[in-house]
Length: 262
Image 1 (cartoon, rainbow, N blue to C red):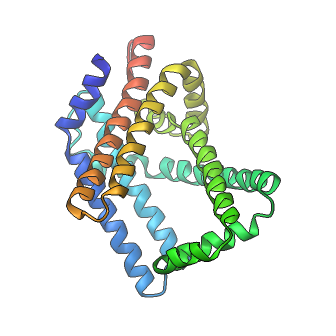
Image 2 (image 1 turned 135 degrees about the horizontal axis):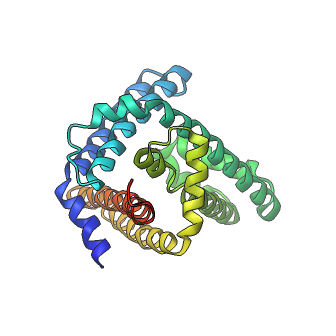
């Protein structure tokens, strides 16, 4: 209970982090919109620039969290984090992309085995994504069994990605708290820590997964009421910050108690 109070207390004292996520999401949306309007949404240069922007932002963002959980002021530590952790965060970003890509391939293999050919599913999903305005009409014209296959495939890939996210959960805390900038060593340390604290981490992650799913559902249900939907959207960012503080604190407190220092 003290742990829960602490992470909510830290979040409430650092609501600027919630605002930072909201502002960054808005900037990202504008960037993507401009890219689409200018016909550059699939341009490799645009994708790379966006990726570098994301890496730079989270390098500074996680540095603020690091100082905050260490009971120090992190408000002016954003640009310090960008300078100190940009390169190792690039390594984590690239390796994570590889892991999630492998997860996607595994989901396709599973879908091919249990759901039949994957190409009709990919074609249907692509049509929906490329023509969101006519999605309702497209859904009405296809075989219900295809809709079920799409839902099962989304469930499979979501489950695999969730497992990958859980396995990599402490990778970033290890980098920032121990300053282990070798991404392979920090990955190994994070995996070792995860399996030593598996049950606590699993229960914590599941609890917040349920909360985020509920908030997301409420946000979707209230889409026709923008003001209320916006409140649930901000709540999802709020609980994301609570979760991040929790992950950092679990790691920081454990290694502090084991080693006597950080």
